[in-house]
Amino acid sequence: MRNTTLCYIHNDRGQTLLLHRVKKENDLNRDKWIGVGGGFEDKESPEDCLLREVREETGLTLTCYRYRGIVTFVSDEWETEYMHLFTADGFTGELTRCDEGDLEWVDDDKVAALPTWEGDRVFLDLLAQDEPFFSLKLVYVGDILQSATLNGKTL
Image (tube, rainbow, N blue to C red):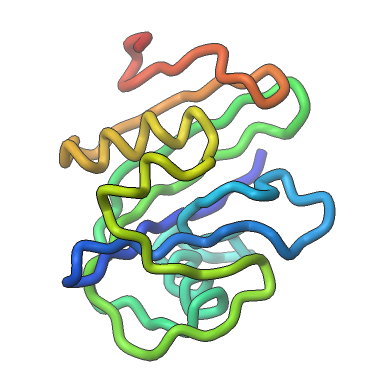
C-alpha cells in the first residue's frame, strides 16, 4: 500500500494550478493533467507530505489549505494507493520549474476538458460541489475505471 497526497491550488483569478505530466519516463500519469503532490516520507502526516510536496514541485508555500477526502485506488496493475486529497487557496512564493512536468494555471471552466483519469473527474466534481469530507474508492482494470464507490455507496 502506498500513501500519497494530491492538491488542487486555486488562485484569485478563477484558475487552478495543474501539472501536465510530460517529463518522466515510464510515468503512470504520462500526458495527464493532475494536481500536485506525491508520496509520503517516513514519519510524515498527510499535511506534512502536502506542504513538502507542494514546495518541492512548485516553489510555493501553502498558507491556507483544506483536507477534502481520501481516495482509494485499486488496480489490477499497481499496488493499492491511499491518496489524501486537498485543495488550497492561500500561498506565498513564485512558481518554479518542475522536473515531473509543466505547471500551468488553467481557467477553472477549462479543467474538465483536459486529459485526465476518468476517476479524477469523479473527485473533481465532488470538489466543485464542495462535498464534505469524503471517502472515494476507484477500481481500475488497466486504465479503465470499473467502479466508483462514494462513502460506501456505488456511484
